[in-house]
Length: 88
Image (tube, rainbow, N blue to C red; front, side, top):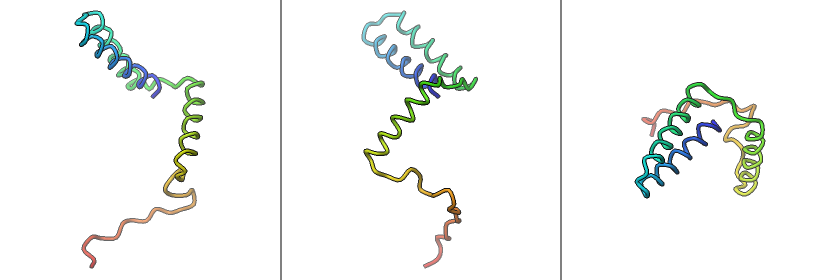
């Protein structure tokens, strides 16, 4: 997911610069970054180890700032079906 997000972000950056400057090289760069983003998604490229550590660090920092629980259900909780809507 790291490479997909990286190349997708670069694609939008190159496309914005291409729209502003009308340079064909930036359009080509946007197209290539889009292709690499789709390739990373389809081939399921592994995340680098440092990006996983960075994501975990950011996720922990955000969880501390928000103060919300990690998940809605605990590990031992059983998810039950919703009651029917027709009951009144």
